Image 1 (cartoon, helix red, strand yellow):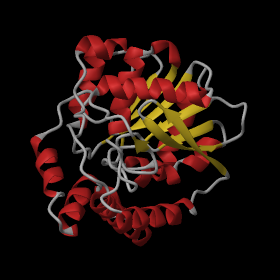
Image 2 (cartoon, one colour):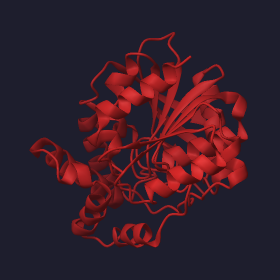
Image 3 (cartoon, helix red, strand yellow):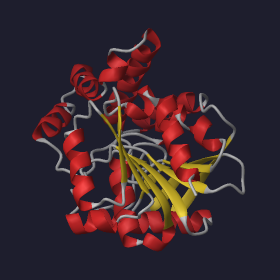
Length: 299
């Protein structure tokens, strides 16, 4: 069956409204970049490339419901040292266009494998994955360890512990067509921004608006649920893996997560970010950037 001309959006009007906002945000990308639309058998994938060529490649995978703009507060610091490939994940919001349904984790792994090849990235490649993007990074690393150099996981969804029901029901409530439910959910996950400076609070409200717009703009998709890794799988993750979690994380208890990694995967460098929630990548961007760069450049 032929895809509607506005696919994957709800309507032509929704597509125009979302992409106008997307392009407005893109103007704030803080460093020179090149936009690429890459063909894979799962559809077209949008990638924004920043940083000096010839430097190590770092693939940036955002969280669920978020396009590559997620990394606006991080890319300037990271692209001083690396060639950064910020991705709009397939089967998610953004400019990527899914034409073959991503039904499971194996499909995501296949898509990432094709994406790296289509981008011409030589093995191994470093990954920085946030939340859902962190979980995707672990699935890829387990399936294609030869393609992964260093792995940075920023509060990866599930992975070390099941997603709690408190997170799930708050996320489900976001489908109610009122902005309040989206704001309530994001405020719960982003305590530092909500209680931060005036600039941080304004940034938070803009993030809520963008998430709310995305929810109203895209046709519904079946979520591929992130799952916790077994002890054996955690032990097989690369020795060069950095796990960062904020001390106010809500998708699992951060102290229990660090304790499990210490028991099951002592090869992983696991660290707590003081004061951070699920918003650590933006609320503590300078500190998170510093730790990522130090880790990726370590001998």
